[in-house]
Image 1 (tube, one colour):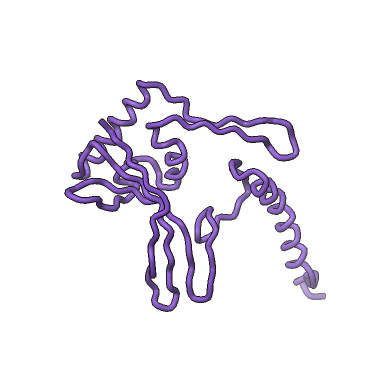
Image 2 (cartoon, one colour):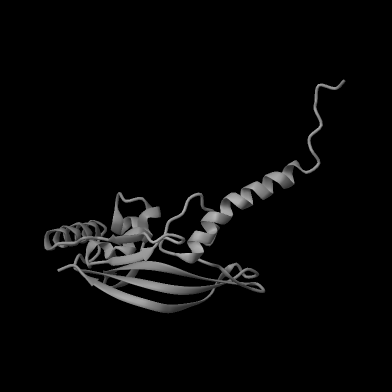
Length: 177
């Protein structure tokens, strides 16, 4: 008798079905209420947003931060946020960089429980956020009184391996004075 035991013919299929069932529940909840952060989660190469696929083109949206140095210059998020890890950028963005109030409520699917999220700002916290952001900009050599947030839709050409076009969707200026 061989020491190697034969495995089931459908072992991989069974595992795939089990994993799919485990991930289907968070997917359904996230689909019903986009405000919830569900785990386990699968983050695809396009990030948490969808990637539009058309022939050789891929279309996606990105937020970009710009500083002022004679003209607007695209910043690396680490320039503005210093020691905050880059994967927290969207949370900081959602909270308006600690400069403006943010409040949202939503129901947890299949329950009657309401969840509140917000940044609970007061004038002292806003002043501290402005000082911290302006110091970070100044340290990087940019004007410390303003930065700009833009949401840009980009169209990437797979054949040419380059950005084909960029469209401005949203722009907001954050004064720090």
